[in-house]
Length: 68
Image (cartoon, rainbow, N blue to C red):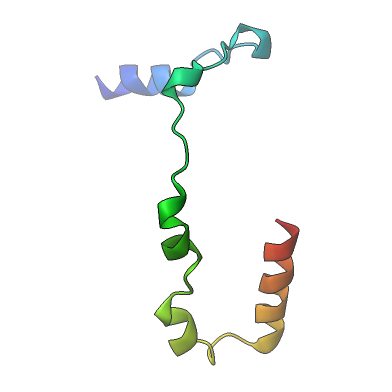
């Protein structure tokens, strides 16, 4: 049984891009802005472990976040 499942998992045909249907819009979820404050809050662990991460790495992290 495991060998049969392995064949199906690794050897499934990859569909062409044109054959993939667009998902139905009614299945998408709208973002609720009521939780934005909690998402943007800086975790307490960042302040506790701040001295462990070198300053240069923190600088690179900030640059990466601005690029994304």
